[in-house]
Amino acid sequence: MSCFETSKFLKNPQVFSKEVLIKAAQRLNWEYKVTQNEVAITKIPNQNVRGEYAMKIQGSKVIYNSYYLKNGEQLVDELKEVFYKLNVEYARSSILSEFKNVGFSLKKDYDFEPNQTEVDRFYMVGYSKNSKEKEKRTEIKFTILNDGTVVSDTNYLPDDIHKLADEAMRKLEDKLGNKRDDKDIVQKQVPIKYQKKVEVLSNKIIAKN
Image (tube, rainbow, N blue to C red; front, side):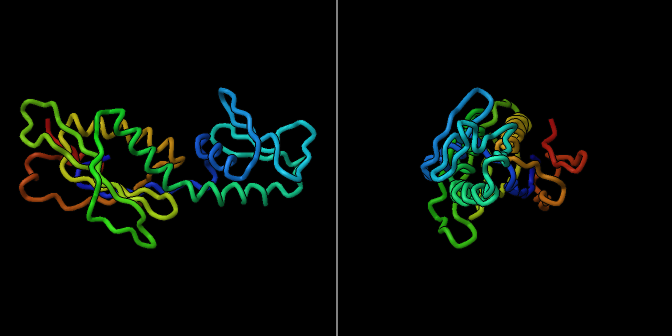
């Protein structure tokens, strides 16, 4: 994450969260079993897998039992359809979880009106503990699109808040199953009042210590 940037987390359609997989299975009335490292779909109506798994999640990727499920791809598509409807909820809860874990708090956007593309918007607020920092309060805006894509927007970030936000964003990338690349990150123009407070390093705008 950088000061004065807009970035986009595109949802990787091949990656499933365990939490969302369980919710999707429950909605589909599929039986499942949870172990430490995987979630296995053990029973699907009208499918006989003879006591073996029907689908399972390994390393955040869903695979199906191609030996018994001749329509496995269709069933995965059914799972995806339900899963994608839960993406917005999952994206929001992931952002809140990771940023609250590093000390940010939620600020609702009461002026936001959802539309066909943008379905949610809110801010995560952090406070710098740097005694020399005059602008201690920071807001990071998040917009969630209808497919679960997350758009973040930052302005000035004090150095200590920047580090916390970077930590939250790294974990958020893991949860959302995709990492941002250069084409997903757009630097904004730095306002004149901040030009002496920040510097550009490796295509990132950071606050000077």
